Length: 608
Image (cartoon, rainbow, N blue to C red):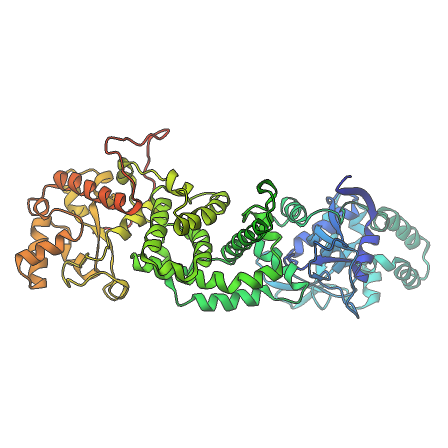
């Protein structure tokens, strides 16, 4: 059975059905936005009998597709009317024609500078039938007073503020096209049934008015049997607005049919997340995806208890179609648990020196992490469980596994990581897939890379101290001391001594320092600025050496300004930190094989 019908329908039948409420919009449709010029353009196209494109409608009646609906802008209904059809594509065109032709009211639109204006639309009857003019030139719009003025408003060049002025100036109001016989009668009375004017009207009616009244519009009607996923996908592919709808917007319309305000609910959730800097970039779609992941996981567990054959069990999934099918019941059931799990994730990551959204390697990894934490609950406070969770996390970061479409990985992560943590089950695929090439360190230069942020976090372990204050870098000092990542061998010194940018600007030559310490570093050689820093710190040599060592480096190479020895030594030390985090050996002789040559197009993160 075909999923749609294709036909042609009279424009006025469409507009009258819009007026009566038989045709409406799904609530997820964005507002009407066409400007004055586009409205004049579509009126001219219809007047010339030019095609304006097909419109797509959706039959109402499928219980699985329940959208909150709304009338087209400008429609006034006395009672709430359930529509027969919804507009999926053609809102802007139909709304423009409806407001200009049917409402008999001034049209609220905007000009080319995006200022809101109000306009009446007219057809210059003479120009519309003169071959020397393009019909678009015959479509004019007037202000609220139905006047056109020049000389800073001092001189009226066209006044249609009275009906008689319309007849006199041969200006036909577009809003009378659906009542043209009444206007024609008064037009003839005004001209005292002048034979030439009657012939003129007859020609205008045949050439222009009939173009409107006889205009046939191609219509595609999606049948009500189509699943919601198909409806939403078709809407996004064909919608002339060109802006994709998010899952959240579509679910908002769906839940609204059950009188649940998803937007307001999300606003309340955002207020709860505000106090956690690491969660600043969590989106409403992230929340929906995590809830869907948890809901499908629990649904599968429940089915397993019923001894259903494994090949018939529902999948754990959070793809777009699954999110669109999330029920309001499951949303409400798992929402608070997932919100608390996002917060729990931020607290755990803060313990591992990831304090802000800017420093979070992958915002996307929070989605499976929150679902995993929701299943584990208080068990995650077990030190062994948390260690396993962080191994999975670091494998995702340094394996750089969450940078593209991740829905399939999320669906594997949740059952595999939970089973691995709770039951010592098989190693999760994310851990198995994680590999890190030593040469990758050379290309980690800015926060655009997840692995860069990962190394930065590892460099702030529990022993790392600022060079001047000697305070440990934790959640409190990170903000109070303005901790950021800075060069160890300063840029100015490196450039003066012929060190390549690819070496001095990569993560190997960077470490977390306070803003005050970095200012003292300046652009001098390490042997000079270290003496100055130690003097400011007011501490003994051996204590200062220990502070330097806490930054995963060998101080002797800094005191001798030996960049190459420092670089090779620190690279090895950083690799050991990564190995410890992912609990996997990194082959030292391995060279990362990539097609082509790495090109650094990213701007320097900072100059120190």
